[in-house]
Amino acid sequence: MPAAAHALNCRVHAEIVRTISRIAMPVETELKLLVDPQYVTRLRRHPLLRHGRRLAPQKLHSIYYDTPDLVLWRRGIALRLRRSGARWVQTVKAGGSVVAGLHQRPEIETAVGGPSPDFAAIDDPALARRFSSRKLRARLEPVVTTEFTRSRYLLKPVEGVVIEASLDQGTIKSDGATEPICELELEIKAGPAWHAYQAALELLATVPLLAADRSKAERGFDLHRNIARKPYKARASPLTPNMTCHDAFQALIESNLTHFLANQHGMLESDDPEYLHQMRVALRRLRSAFAIFAPLLADDVLAPRVAETRRLLATLGRARDWDVFAAETLPLLTARYADHPGIAALGRQTAQLRSHADRAARRAVASRRGQHFILASGAWLLAGDWLTRLDTAQRTALLQPVMPFAHTVLDHAHARMLKRGRHFGRLTPPKLHRLRIAAKKLRYATEFFAPLYDDRRVERFRAALAHLQDVLGGFNDAVTAARLVEQARRGLTSASAREARGILLGWSVGIQHSGGRHLKLLWEKLRAARPFWT
Picture 1: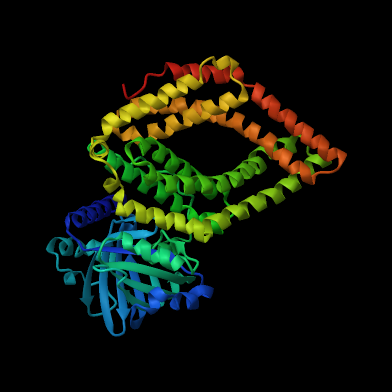
Picture 2: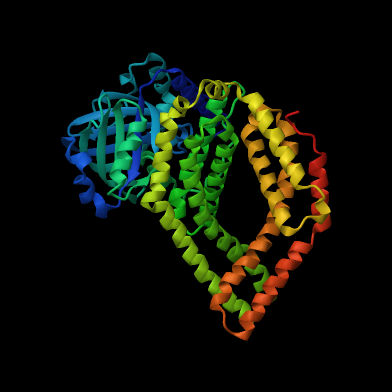
C-alpha cells in the first residue's frame, strides 16, 4: 500500500476509535471459563444449572470482518455478523477490559438482512457515518468464522441477580486452520458483576474450570495470524495523580491479576519458561501491592489473599529456581567441562528435578485451589466490601489522594534499603540477600507510583536501582545453585558425580566473592541518586 494511502487509512480508523469512545454503548459483562470436554456432562448435571431455567439451544454461525492487515482489530474493534436460525445480527464491539476472566466490552447489536456488513443499520449517526467510509468498506472481508452449539440456562442465584450461563461447543476457523471451542460464559443480565464469580466458584467446587482471558474473536485472530501468544510482561502502572488511595489499590490489584492470568494459557500449554516467570513476577508484584496498602486496610481484608499468594508463589518459585539453574547456570559449567561424566550426570538429574517442579507448578495453577485463587480474587476485587470493615478514620485515610501516601511509602522503602546496605563492604551473603529484597520492594513501589512523578527523574533512579538489583540477583542465583545441587546430590552416586558437585559448589562460592568492587560501585551510585519523589 502506498505510504500516503496507509497514512490516510490510519487517520480514518483512528477517528473511528475516537468516535466509538464518545458513544454511550451498552456494555457486555461476562465471565469466560474453559471446560475440558470430558467434564461437560458433569457440568450439565450441576445443581446450579439444573435448577436454572433451561432456554432453547442455539446453533450459531459467526463471521468476523476486517481488512487484510487487521486495521480494526489492531485498534480494539471487532465487527461480527452472527446467524441464529434464519436471523442475522450485526455486532460492533470496541475497547473493554479483562480482569480475572471477566470480560467487559461496549457493544452495539443490530438485526440485519444477511451475512454482509450493513453500516446503515447502526442507529447511532456518528458511528454509522464513520463506518460508511468507502475506503473502509472496500477493504473489509471475512477473516474468522466460528460455528458452535450453545446450551443456555437462566440463573437467578439471589434476588435481583440474573445470569445467563452459555455452554458453547464447536470450532473456530481461519485460513484453513481450526481450534476447538468448549467454554462456559456467565453473562450478567442484572445485578452486580461479582456474582458471575460467585456462580463460577459454586461450579468449580465440583467441575474443573479454567478462567479464560481471551474471547473467541481473540483466539480466532491469533489463529488467523498464525502466531503463538507471547509471554505477557507487566504493563506500565495504571495510576494517575487524581486517584485516591482506594482507586490506586484497586487499579494495581486489577493490573497484577491481569498480568498473572494473561500468562496462564502459555504456562500450561507451552515449554517456554518465560510464562511461568511472568506469572511469578505478577504474584510478587501482587504481594508487594498488598504490603504497600496494608496499613490502610483492616487486617482480615488482606490475610486470605496474602496467604494464597504466598502459597502459590512457593510452588512457582521452586519451578523457577530449577528453570534458571538448568537454562542459565548449568550450561556455563557444561561448556567448560564438556567431557566430564559427572557434569553430564548432574545435567540428567537436573532435567528430572526440573520436570518434576514444572509439573507441580502446572498442577497448582490448573487445580481447583489455583483457579479458586483467581476467581475469588476477582469477586473480592469487584465487590470491594473492605470499605465497610473500616472505621471512620481508616476510611478517610483510604479515600485521601494517593500522592502523599506514595511519598510516605517511597520514603519508608528507601530508608529501609539504605539501612540494609549499611557497612556494605562487610555484608555477608544472607545480608546481601536481605538488601536485594529491600531493593526489590523499592523497585516495585517505584514502578507502581512512577506515573505520579517526573518521567526522567523516575527513570534515572529506577535504572540505578535495576542495575544493583540485577547484580544482586546474580549473586542470589549462585546461592540458589548451591542449594539445588545439594538436592540433586541425592540422585548422584558415582565419584565423578560427587566431583561435579564440588565443581559447582566451588563455582558458586567464586561468584559470590567475585565482582565485589563492581557491586560496591553500583551501590554507591544508587545511594547517591536523588530520590525522584523529593
